[in-house]
Length: 89
Image (cartoon, rainbow, N blue to C red):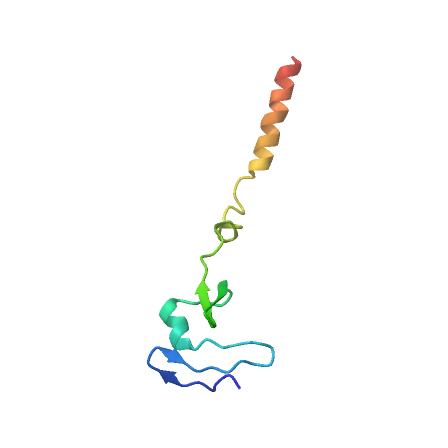
């Protein structure tokens, strides 16, 4: 099904599945560093479909990096509570 491809210079023939899926051969995935889950921009120019790898979202990549550390929210709430106490005196 997806194994029907042959390499010709810098191109490859692949088969489009009934769901519109196309498997990018490992030769090309390795060459440009594609990893599972990476986002690709799909565009069309002059009747050609162009797939361009997209850089990861920096916010998504940093998600969870600070987990387990000091809670900045808790520290801010504690500071505000102390501030309120000082204002009441």
